[in-house]
Length: 421
Image 1 (cartoon, helix red, strand yellow):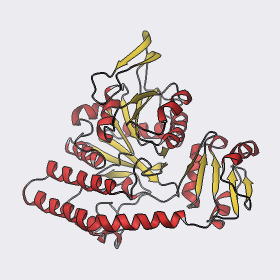
Image 2 (tube, rainbow, N blue to C red):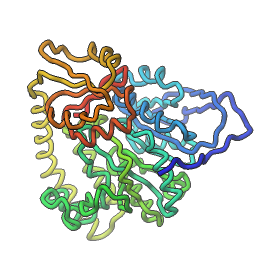
Image 3 (cartoon, rainbow, N blue to C red):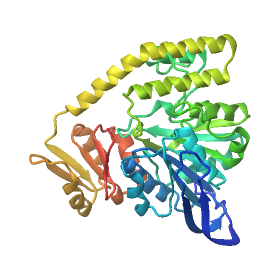
Image 4 (cartoon, rainbow, N blue to C red):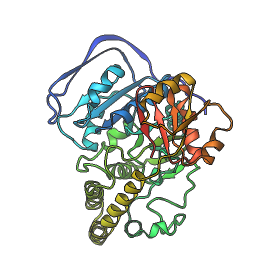
């Protein structure tokens, strides 16, 4: 798709101090944020909620800046009281980004709403901090709203840092049967079934653009006009479930939730939360309980509530133990004697001092445009791979991840390294 025509205009009024006062928000630092700028009628507001993910957020913002290059965009990061020095590290690197510092972890929904309150764009994108987007991502997504007037919210095909499709990219609403088959694990036995795997809409082709039921909060784009009718995230959900709830309200308001199969983004998935923790399990199933109590009545509500509580009692311990075992296996994996760097020699020279001590490891340097690249990664599936982001487009980087399905990818920004596994 071609790049859409600019959707913004420059107003006559010029302001040298755009002042935001957050003292009336509990949990926020009582501070005044000053941003000097000309007032643009913003096309896109990008709201990112972060918690202890400073390096992932650094890489995310680098990709967002490239994708927003030709679009009137404002970027708002709401930090939920990180303790890893996120703000001190990121503010000097991204002076054009508005950072809001919370005094406590306000939860995902509430923090998103804080960012929304101070945004001005015609379109609002809620984006997770552990994502990478290609250069044409925003222009392609915005064009969907120009072509399909009934679309009220848009999601996108997501892969993880190992190139595996994330099935939460397209989901159904949690009906009685969908909830039962998901919580019991039966959906895994019939991944392509409309009936057994309705929660993840397994019968729908992930490579096809189409209307679905529920979008993922990791990448959720809506016109401001729709949010004004439906309301934003329900702050009763601390974490998880608020995206399904908002998707449901968009649907009930007469709009379509649309899934875009291309371009593709990387969602490292769960860097803000330990997915093997009991806290994650409690929050996830607690969110399902809130959704059921809010949107269903009578026998349906009672049945779904019983299933949710059964899931906490039966499914959660097994998931917890399985995730712990998986994490232990990853930690005890044998180091390889070879490694691969994708980038220029200058980037490789800057990267090597940051790598762990590898006295017996040889590193192979591959140019980003090498036609053998994907094939070599498939052949050396267990070798660590380091991709230098500054030497190729994020679109090309995502293509490499998508096609190679490599399990040990790492990404170097020029400052920091993050892992895809």
